[in-house]
Amino acid sequence: MMTEPSIDTSRPSSARVWNYLLNGKDNFAVDRELGEALRSANPAIAAVAQAQRRFLVEAVTLFAGEAGIRQFLDIGTGLPTANNTHEVAQRVAPESRVVYVDNDPLVLVHARALLTSSPEGETAYVDSDVEDPERILREAAGTLDFSRPVALTMIGILGNVADYAQARSIVARLLEAVPSGSYLAVSDGTSTSAQSVESQRVAKQSGHPYNLRTPEEIGGYFEGLELLEPGVVPTSLWRPQPGTEPEALDVYCAVGRKP
Image (cartoon, rainbow, N blue to C red; front, top):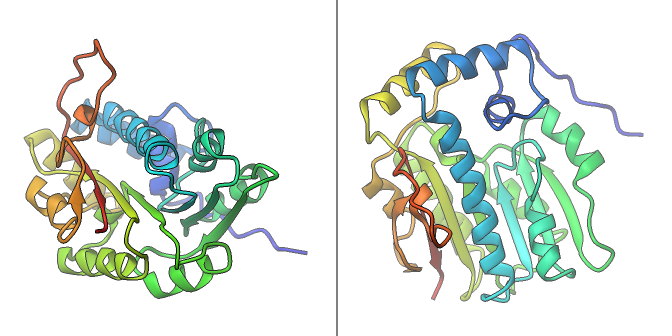
């Protein structure tokens, strides 16, 4: 019988703060307090959370549909909401296999209960920090076949790595492990406004630092990949719905294919 992990409610958790900003219910007072402090520093922060969620759904739909991908490695899962990666992928291709990676104990509790799979596919969860790509790859290999293309999704997670060179190295190692025809989707906060930089200061002050990148640094994750249109852009402007005119936000993204 599995023991439930210990959940620390005295310190904010990025997964729970993001859940709060997405109007979720899986958060505690300490998370709501930081969420409101971030919103005060950067009023667009909730829109950033929503834009990243839309990007994940659009990217996974593209991977499972047009690109024909059947294997997904979602690093930095966060708390389950509507349209999780496996739900989106298996809606298009029920045989899709999805591995979620996160190190938040509350995410693990929810993953066991909610991140179920279609009968034809498979869903698994890896309890690991993003800074340990070798463990991620080793444990994900129990579900994924790394001789076949894999879609890597890293949404709002690489900012948790303080050193940019290390973040680049992590992405490079993950890409090294997957074959030609695999895809990478990244979205992360950028230092493109005073409000965004102020929210970074607030997060750091709370003991929960998040490292903003420049749009050029976001683009650096895709070195050696074939960028899909429209390239490296504000996440809210990545293939927006026809007839919409979204605002450019302080969060950038891109999707690339390994040649």
